[in-house]
Image (cartoon, rainbow, N blue to C red; front, side, top):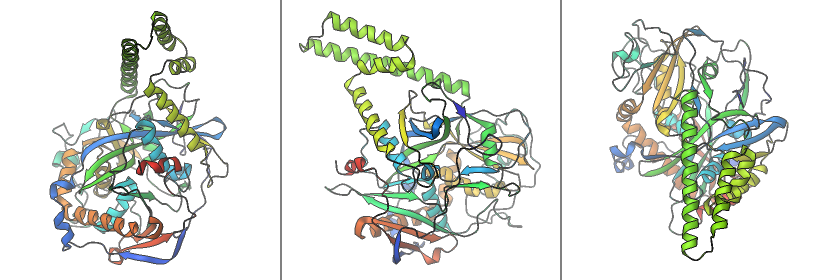
Length: 547
């Protein structure tokens, strides 16, 4: 199984850039409503308790990867495979990002319906998941866009002037949680000192530095759909990320930083021994789906997991161990079911018992393809239900095609043998120079917050030469950021609730939000969306809100 992110320097890409869209594609006429951004004096803010601003009851619901195989064959693997931390010897010189890159992979592979893979992944891994109590289903990106809009422009404090330490071996410095930090590094000057992570802006006097690679003010769009709400259940608001382009080609000479090159050089996908099952496909980005409660609302959020703290060897050891545990548990379930049937007069005789044992040996001893067929013959009712769901999943996804890509590509799904990897080891990865660190942290911490990513690794470079990696445990950092942004978070949550109320009252309960960064005084414009545009929910999953 190949390991590629399809950027310059890795190899030829089989993909082509998609056709740009216009901001109001699929909308009808003038705005149907405008929602003002709540101010600090808004009375609704008082109804939100400070302790409720911290995401609680966090759990990972599912994960998946896109896989691109021979013959332009697409599939989704559920649960997915995370990238492993695999740093080279430092310092290392990397070229800047150029060539093809994905902006919104789920839109590129599932045009017009970017939330469909999220929902498919959830119900493939958790067929019994009850979505009726979920208030918001969304990408992390949509939450971030609205939050930055509410927060308004914030300038970072000045960059630190103290010389920083350089090192070899992939860094290894921890900036939080009492772990060692190098002398003179930003982390060694106290939690977040000089990094500007709080978002309060301008602390520390002197010259304000422009944010690193900060986009100029621009209009943003989010599509909104309301599902369910009947029979006394709460309706769910689905926020679909929207981008003018879901991919782009970075031309030579146009500087965009080193982020993608860094990811390719410092991380590697862990295949966990499933190369044969993967058909030698190109394993793509790892997407994760978490659920948490915040501000009295329940969120289901998809985000991109950059890596895990474990190495390739550690991941493979974990995957093999967990698969063996799972197989032992399934054998116990089959034996218990057979014993229960025999006790109830089900007629499970000695021949059936021997046959069951022989089938178990066959599953263990044969190749993966034959073993899987044998497993299905002796499968428990739950396993048979899972196999049926996988079939439904494949049939549902096979109807999707890449209308925005020149070649039409069918999509299928594969149920991974590897269990869902735990949230505690997930890493967010950023790159910056010492001077751009405050701006980078100002943008990174809200991103980490909305996925509750427990680790943040920062690669520091000078002219593309990466000299050290700072490793941060984010729990304490996020708590302090929450305190600093208490009012902004309350205003943000009130705005989300009001968007939901407005769209729920509109005909068809679907709309498009348009807002402009840096112009929060203009509010959020709400447009009606045409009925002939695709919805975010596969037809066979619509009933999940009515069950």
